[in-house]
Length: 268
Image (cartoon, rainbow, N blue to C red):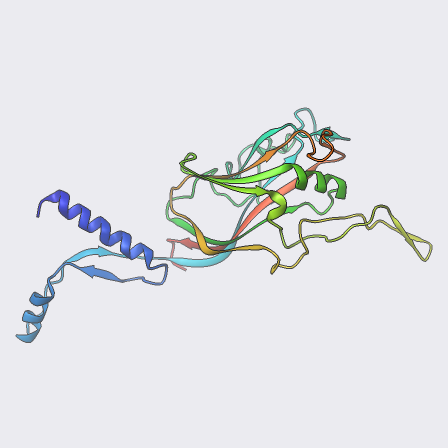
């Protein structure tokens, strides 16, 4: 067998081991022919095994979130805003990591992104030695966002998934299709007075706050070591029903989160 043929066989064997999942530490594929192994064992000899491929050390598996938060609308001058239009276009998620400039995610007065915004170690790419099998996805808003601002976002924003520099593009549709399953729920049109006490109950969220109320994939979304990916929210400038400009009354934070298995090659 020439070297090219051997490399193809070895590559196929390694690919097969990877499909078996994270619970195969120490599993190997042996290149020795079965007849040779039987021959040696029947004569009391210890076979000299030749591995075609080895699963290697799998490491630690944790269930956890992978998340990223952006702030709308973008304000290039300061950290306060009374109201503002959302500029039509693409807004990228997971393209920056901890320590990157806050302006990359719409926080123009935040010097660096922290764990409050994302747990990406590096923007847009899975680090070496780490991988994800993700089964759930949700979109949430900050608890202080005004109901009218949330509804405008739900009506005018669409979600898509891109991988390996847009070699794969999946259009997920309006963000209201992907409820967050957490946060404040329900809203009233104005503050309510109860027993001479005024209580402001104006609040809203994308979906009833129960983790069962999120979208789940039958097959996991797999993000392997060193793979490039991103989620994109595409925003429209006008509402579809009345064709009026989208104008938020205050900043709105939108978080895209994914939940599943995080596989780390560092043993637990």
